[in-house]
Image 1: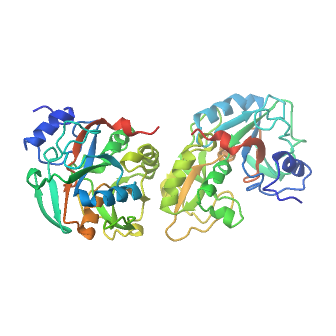
Image 2 (image 1 turned 90 degrees about the horizontal axis):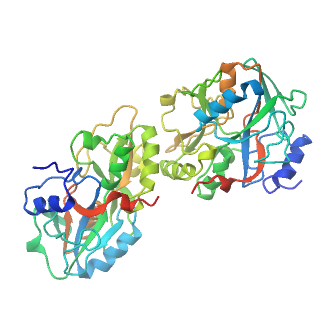
Image 3 (image 1 turned 90 degrees about the vertical axis):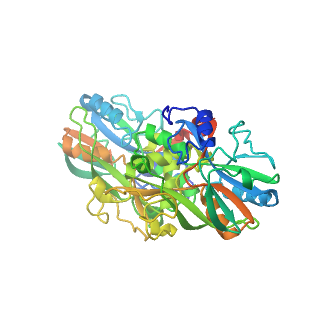
Length: 263
Length: 263
């Protein structure tokens, strides 16, 4: 098999659709933007759209499908959001019930798909600037944490902001702030740096999603708002049904990362 | 007397020239750029110019006078750099010998004046973004420290980078990194954030120049390269004579701060 980091998005999506790839997508189709997925019934779509609009750091919207359509026309017009993500999570009444490889059997004609920007997009320019990324070096999922930073409520949607964390030297944290500020559509600048307890994280070695990574001496944890936020929100908000990607298992789009740089 | 923060640069320079103002210039002629001064004999001018070119973070050059001329034509064409700074320091053979209010008696026809960007320029946009600046609140001089970050050598000029420090919440430190990145001509982004010992500062409560300020709980120290660096360099490099401004006592130019924003 060709190396996944050098493959085209369409080729990888095909392998995912055939369930030949079922793991995290970090590093695949290098240079192409990956996206978080939220699927909701149309009756909740307006409130969730407003929720994204009110919480642009954690929920920057990249694409919204027409009700009943499973093709995200802006990001990957040939993709099928029911099948082209390696792993999905089903939430019923705010309870995470199962992880599945395909959501066709859950799909209804009144469902709307939301694609939300993902911090993987800014990892390419970070690496190109010589900033090491620990979860890539350790070949695991980025650590993610619930914080005490409340999202702005919209309808039934409310809950805590989830953050992803990358440990860095202070110099790299400054450079990473500059670089990620150029990418507001994929969470933009960090929302916190340093002491985790200031944002309500009591144990940095125990992420709520993803994997724990080493923080070296002389490194500080740097936190970005994360597209997994809707999953924490789903738990508090209890929509009848909500389907999301599994953390780290993203939709690989046909749009280049650099398309989201504002400078 | 009119308030110094609302006065025009030319009016303030006149009061300074008449020695009616002899203290620090922070907050005066609000919105106009202030500059650090270095005066050297022409024989050292090339090496120092190259030193600035090699160390743009600490020594961003705003203006260089013709040998023997005391008018900085780009920054304040009517100013006299021998008289229009409230306080100067004289260094002979690397030894700081005295502080004076006027350097006319030291001035020679083969002297060159260098104006170097000052972090006061980015304090205005920081304040406008709602970021409190502790040394302004405490009405004292910004704290400055020698670090273990060596400047790049040029001829006889070598020595440590001096930094200015502003304590901030982590959120403000992130926003301040964005704002100051827009001002590369006045030191640009921070060069360090957090643990002072990582850049060789052993006691944050004892600055090498300026005054100590309070660091509140939940605040981190944020460090910018500082135009006082040439004074630390003068001590190590021992030029026959070097004249500088006294820390915090700057030349007030006719150029607006915003002229140095690159975005």
